[in-house]
Length: 253
Image (tube, rainbow, N blue to C red):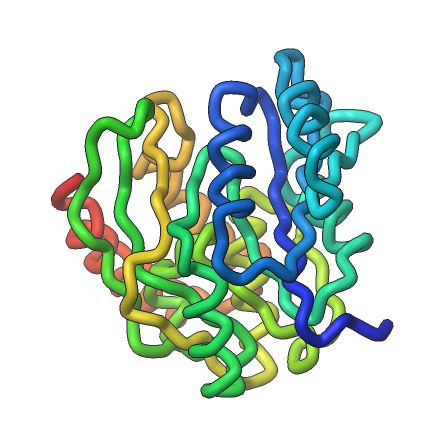
């Protein structure tokens, strides 16, 4: 497949996101880098998610609403968008998160200069209504496959992937489809490089499953054993390092 070299394809899965998806879309429309297509995949939402997207897409041809025929979860929704993405660069933005205006411009310049497969950035958390902003969550300088096993430091809504280096790719149907994807892309070599600039807002929703740390830990272990098929010793070593970094990561809001 031939990708458009300067086009960024923004992948956004959405389910019950009517309260937030408009803000997410507007944060993309506000980018200083304007050559993008944003594909919002509605995963059979029972609320007005699709209607909100349709209204904004009617006024901006760069915004596209894709509808799933049945609810399949974030991996299936992301894969639907990836199958239709035309850009060399794939950026991910979850429906309840936000980008700061210079996100694409600064990150693309950084990414191109380093010829990396993946880039990611620093970010801050916000609460549900955006009235509270948390401390800076810094970006690691770089992560290869081995480091990434020990450190789930990449926030999905900060990621850009260069398909000129990775080729076409898809998400696996697993709980942490994003983490499993980054591991798969780096398993054959290469790095994810971190831009130490605050360019994303991660919305903390009280009922979010990702905030259940015990379940998160269980799913990371499952990624080692069932997805990556690591031996027990390497899984245990990676898990101990992951757990230690995770405690530091969530010490503060």
